[in-house]
Length: 215
Length: 249
Image (tube, rainbow over all chains, first blue to last red; front, side):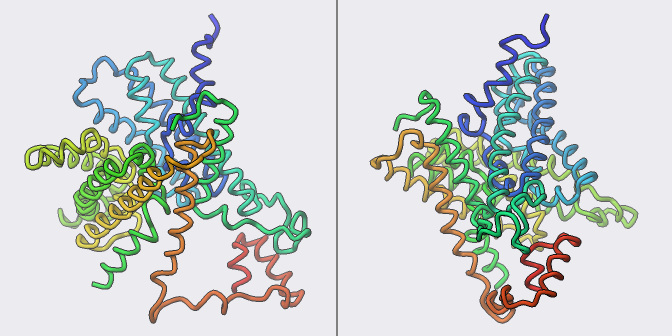
């Protein structure tokens, strides 16, 4: 038996494009916008969400037959909160500077609609292996958008990628700066993230007309 | 008093929950198709924030922060339970939302009906948890200020969703490109509104202890000597300060 059947593989590939949690399902927007001024923060956030969603999906799926329906939101919240506390403590211990940049948004992973959304829509009705794949797939889809937005915002806004100056030195005017290019400060302010995501949605829906909304 | 007024206006305009820190975006995007439902959700958010932020402040002050348990006895002064903040805050919020729902259903059935499904959904709205987490991160000093912060952040969110709902109702008659229709154009409009709200950033910098205007501090880079330029470059490379900090020394 192959490790991943075709149906299982689609659990990972669908959220990457056609069923993307941010641009199609409209979930998990808050943290996607706020921390993407730096590429490094975007990558760390994507990994954190992958950990929480993957493991959370498995835990909820294993418990799905014993959770009473009336308190399922509370159980889900407890599972997510616990996993996020672990992530937060690990970040504070091993990457303190980054945890300061991410500040409250690590905590806000708890209310990240992707996680609760996938618990409700998938983990409560499917087995642990498929739930794990679904969790990984959706967090990869989320991560792809975060990384694209973070990439453009950091490159155009500070001329760096992951902290390395890739366009030249703005002070000594080497590289691209010698031609008179200046960093676009607009990309660093929060509203730029909204506009970049709007453009990503534009591109995605132009390529796939089935996703266009009727007015 | 001045502190309260400053916090009030700062939370509504400068640190607006939607435009500055993007909290509550999912419900903001989903509910903003009509002004009437947007008003209902906005009012619910203000109400829940006004109730949960002060409560979580009390929890933080007397249970969670470093040395908070000192009222139990001096031997507890070293305890730092702040790692439990997330789970306790979300528990308070879920409980309070359930309570608010019961109270509203009992005392104002019409309001309850108009809010519909939104009231229970507010428990997982990141604006609510975000309000409490920012209250903790910004070290709000008193219960009155915490209540003020809760109400004013709620009003800021309410303003944002009201504005976008009104605009979305109007652009139904506009010629939006097909791929941008609905979600895409809402993102871009929200971005433009965010840029507009940035203009409020100068609102609270007047007065005696305001910072000196930026123009006076800025150095004219071209007139600076070669040695100074080398110094600045070295400082940036070795000490990892930002460009602005280095030239404004």
